[in-house]
Structure formats: structure tokens, C-alpha cells
Length: 233
Image (cartoon, rainbow, N blue to C red; front, side, top):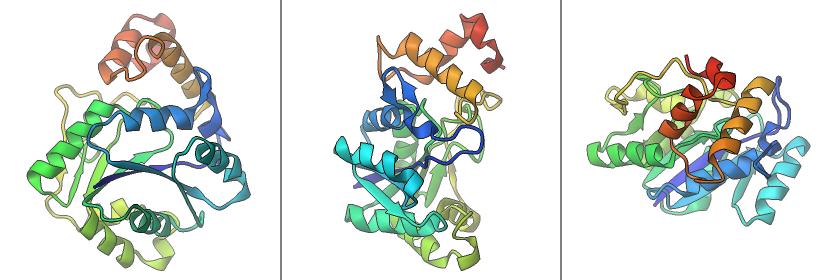
């Protein structure tokens, strides 16, 4: 089984509650769930969030839609990932997606997973050798080594260090997914009100015709819209 874990919380210094901010009539977190679910390689998706009261609305919404949610201490990233692995059952690989990425590309997820399976690498991603826009990061880890990295994470690092970072640090031969063009200068993450306005504009333009719109579709709409020009370079 290939498990995807979507990290999401309601806290954000510049855009509080962004996970529940609407995109085409649904919360941003649900648009991410939909898009990750379009990846053919993903067997199961778990949304990992905290047990803090601020994340109650997020968890309640997802559970009302039938989406599995795992809640853990806000101060312990490693615990949340370890519990997600335990809850999912036998898992061969884990895909990590972050919660500020409403343009997560199903085809790109499948591409990185396919490379992980073909190479047998412990860690595979498109983020160490960047060529894709920020916000399209995909990390794939073999479940066994990831579990070992989780167990080895120092107590003082559990709040801030992703277990994937721990795994990257110990892997001398990671596999790199590199695109045909260098688009690493683009940033499509939603971190500010301006980023959210961009996401809304793109969704309004592309989602009605194709909910699974691709990275190339976003590039095309940016090139054709002067109001979105700042995200083109």
C-alpha cells in the first residue's frame, strides 16, 4: 500500500485558517484532498493535524466528509507520522504533501512515486534538486527506513524537524525527480492573502472545466493574464 499523508493545520502567522478558506465553494483542504485522490498511485490518504482546539473545525469538516484524520500533539511531528503509519496498516511507501499546496499535481505525484518504485530508493523527491514550482513538492519514502528515522529523531527535534528531513539527512543516495524545465523560481504555495487571491483566480479559471488541471494549465493561464504576471517569474 502507498500511503499519502497531508499535513495541515489552521494556524498561520500571515493567513490564519487558510486550510478552510474557500476555493470554488469548497475549503482549500478539500480541494487538496480531491487532487491527491486523483493520483493513481495513492492507495490511501490520511490528513494529519494537531489536537489543538484551533484545529477542531478542520478535523470535524474532514471527518464529516468521510476523510480519515489523524490528530496528534502540535509539538511532535514525528509522532503524527508514526501514528499515521500504524493506522494505515501494511505500507510500502509514504508520500508527504504539505497543506499550503492547493495545486498539488496528481500526475506529478504519480511520477515521483513511479520513480521511487523503479529505483528502490529510500527517499525520492522533486525538492532536493528543484525544477518544479514551490507548492508542487512531493516526497516519497520507503516505509521501513522512514519508521526507523521516526524512532531516531531526537526529542528536541520532534517539534520542528520533519521525519522526512531526518531521512534525507541519513540517505546518501536519494532519487531526484527533475522536470524538463527549470521552474524553481515560481512559488505557488498559499502563505499570504496575495497567494490566496492567486489561488482563487486560478481555480476560478480552470477548475470548472477540469478539476484535475495540471501544472501546465496553471502556467498557461498565468501567461495569458496580466493580473497574474507576478507569479510568472
